[in-house]
Image (cartoon, rainbow, N blue to C red):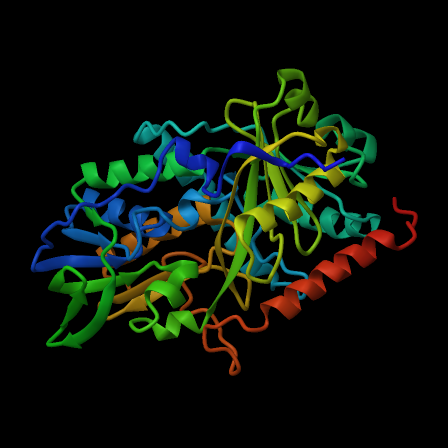
Length: 446
């Protein structure tokens, strides 16, 4: 007897989020011949930067090579928090205390700004401030997270506490984890609708935003920039690069210094069919967003209406189509929730996350050329905040740092030119290490 397909009859290889807001088709339009600020890249960071500049009366133009919001801003998992992922790395040495404190305080400020923007601009995006659980992958992770919890509570007011296995079971309808980390100051939203609301706010403030307009060349002369685009040339007093993980795709020839410091990593998601209400509620009874403490995490949450499970991970580090990645994610989902076996997948999609060698985002620049890059998996809140902070830097004409992330270009490696040739090897090694640690005998922990 043939196995039933996991795919629904109306399966789509596009983000489920696009039912709420899809990247708009941008009809051809004449560009201004001169602007004060040109922003290259129309994701969260670019649009947030444009919003703040336009509110201050700056003439600002945002251009993107793809449709507006086509990248990670309408493809992410939609989880939001303030500092939980700062500096998170399986190989990174501990940060100095003062540096760590500054980074976490600014990450907490990012979450505050995010909620203020939702309120001020009346952005309706299915926001649920229900908290987050990081499932503990192996008992050996408990002590490290106890130490992190102290830092997050002290510097970021994250409301973190460690959950026993029984407490975690009451939060997640699964016996998969060895406990959990509860983060109170967190939640989840519909990321494409949030992007659409941010874009609408920037346009109301006066920012001009156009997609499907690649920037082909940038030259500096006489204190201004001459910019060649697919819709003609223009000049700008200053230019901001906000291409993030897509620097190598859409800004390859115009921002090579950014490309060398950013590692684009593919990530994938699936959406289930609508589930019976009782089944959906049994998966995540408190409607929290879920992540994990391992190297290659899976993340998931219910849809804003509580009827679907949206499940994501870095399914593979090799090129693969949406149906293949859906099958890999489906296995991971069933490992955590066997009760979902037989439920169909309606959507499968992927995107790029911008990682840096120091696992931190960065903003900076001067003399008319600025950048924001490196979300490291915290794009919704952090990229919004850093776009806003970069706009403040431009408006103040400030040479001093505006925040803890204003510290220059991300570090690069002599053997890396922007093409992540090593990711299949490194990613597969991390996946192997995660599987190996799950099999190790449990040790006694306090």
